Picture (cartoon, rainbow, N blue to C red):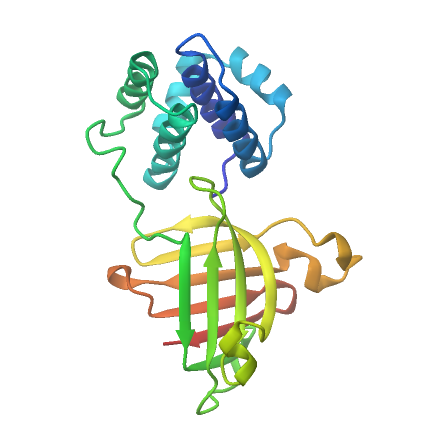
Amino acid sequence: MEFNLAEKLAIVKAIDMVILANGKIDEGEILYLEQLMKALEFGFEFVQEARKFNATQAKLILQGMSESKKHSLSHSLYLMARADGDIDEKELETINSIFMAVGIDIENAANTKPPFDVSDVYFESSEHILYEKGKPKSGPYGKARRAIKIETDMEGIEEYSVTSYNLDDIPALWGSNIQMASKQMKVIESESTKTVLRGYGEDPGAMGHPDGVFSNYGISIIHPNNKIEKIVLHRYDRSEDTEYLK
């Protein structure tokens, strides 16, 4: 999920408040903070800037965030508090005070889920159609089985790897027939019927080749009633979209 600079400062300030709530910093909290730093793309010096951030202004910024961003905040605060093995009373009081200030439902915050869980998706497609600049270019093919897999290795961190597979060949049974190598992506849009991810960063071995620039890729997951109807793979540098149908 993409956060602007002001939102990042406000979020880091809230996280820092939880870390300091019980007067001690645990190793587990530092490890989780490092994961957040990678996901939100900030350094340790950013924490110092967040500590200087006006508390009233931070509250207003957090109040103005979307519900999906508030969900991400609430989940991150709980994970930070649990990073040392347990949530003590002072940490819980701090979290609850932040929730009240921001407008997050305290009773349901820990159990609230975003409209669609993108953390472990495996979608098998029986057919696909290629579009160029919004116009059909090729397909449907009658039979062209593919699979899109989305996964994350870090709980609570919204960054994912997206891989596509060709299921028409025997090697695909063992997951060795990769059609599109894994691309790292983040959620940039989350609605009740659609979730959009966009690539970020670059494969160090790509040497500038467009296939290794992850921002050239993205996917849209269409999921009415939280059931995947189709997935669209975007190739932004080519103005191409591949629509994978159920």
